Length: 251
Ligand code: PGA
Image (cartoon, rainbow, N blue to C red; front, side, top):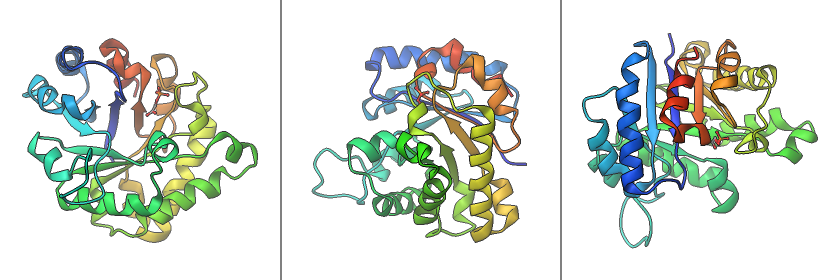
């Protein structure tokens, strides 16, 4: 049985004290979740050490939002996978559409980042998703399949045990416009079949695929009820502990 996961991507929000408060509230409320639901928070880099402390002893796991594409050295402003490990990070999000759109993240760079993250023992939440023009041109299946192939086809079935895919249609992120459960499900099923082509059915069936894009307590239940949607990557609604937990209770 693949894992169900709800992950909160805090993006560039909260100060460190606010982040500690939010993490503590999430950790406290997480006790009410069923055992088969994994909960992950991804605060900004500056918060990681303090949030690690705040969630200690709870079931909440810690993720970064990005990592460097080099191991170490003269890369001003970057944060390495070893640094993330040293503050007890278990995960990193990679390839978020905001990184692709504003910071020139390419599939090629993502291959390097995924390699480094896996070699450090970090789990990877790899984001894929089409933009509005691509959706309107009917290219969404090809775009998402292409992103999966360009990045994940460089890895092994064994590596896939540490990789979660997050499908986030760019037009639904932060816009209040959610993909319908049917729109999300058909892409999730497509992702699973693209994974099956390379890694076999069993690996594909075991891979957790999250939906992201204006997921909130009012629509999570319908999304998570779809056979190929295994949870969510939550932006705005992850900034309120009650909403975040409510979403995680929606399976
Ligand atoms: P949103 O963001 O929930 O605010 O739309 C999701 C994401 O970008 O991960």
